[in-house]
Image (tube, rainbow, N blue to C red; front, side, top):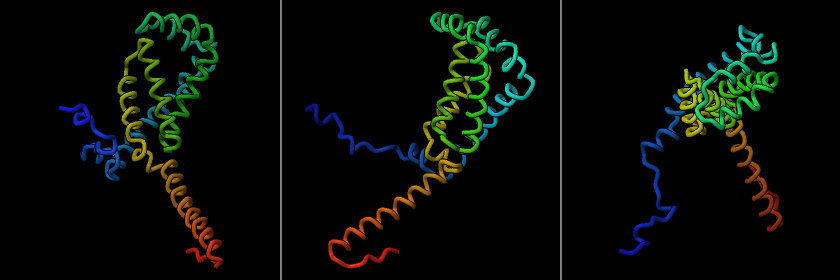
Length: 197
């Protein structure tokens, strides 16, 4: 048996129908969008609590006491991560706390509005992983899983949102520009005046 017969050409690889349905279907797009919005609301609640709510004094005041306490008393998953927490996060807890608070709020806003969805989901997942690695499991592992699903389905999960409107506008606008440029180029070659619909 030849090696070439075992290796498939990339253009011959087909996505399974079930996976294609999950990632391209309009119906599943509604499901993924609902999941995206739900996760965004969870992040907004966490950010609002830190920026304006009950956790405000521990994050934005008192030199980031919440972050310093969390980083110094948590049980990190890896020793190198513990060294990072004690050597970098604790001494800089005041501005790290502000960064965390604003990041959580912006991640939530991006997910709810469907704006820069892949970036918002990535930052959210990274925040979740840092929390898990710092010794707090709670809901973070589940949120990270949801963020990964949103990333895997970002085209359909962001269809209902600003990203979807931008994509639709660009496709329509680029199509018109293409027709205008092609037909005006043909007209110059033939010497006639183009008629663009």
